[in-house]
Length: 92
Image 1 (cartoon, helix red, strand yellow):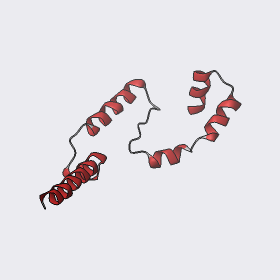
Image 2: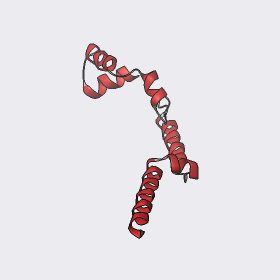
Image 3: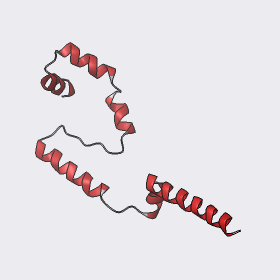
Image 4: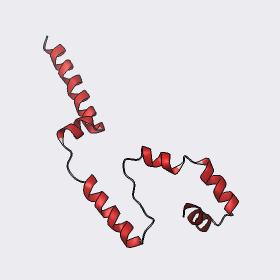
């Protein structure tokens, strides 16, 4: 599927498409590193449904643990720490 789509999209030969694919990280490795994988091998309607389900999941509010471990949580913590240290030093 990947090969056919690449050839159709870019209008390139099978050899050129294979060279591009082989120059990339293997799909299995991409799947392992991904937070979310959406299977788009079925119909467009089924893919749209999967995308909608993922959007529902990622739009849910974070738990406190998830927030603390997120980039925003780290920035919030570090900002509070810096302001707290500055306030403590200024008060002396």
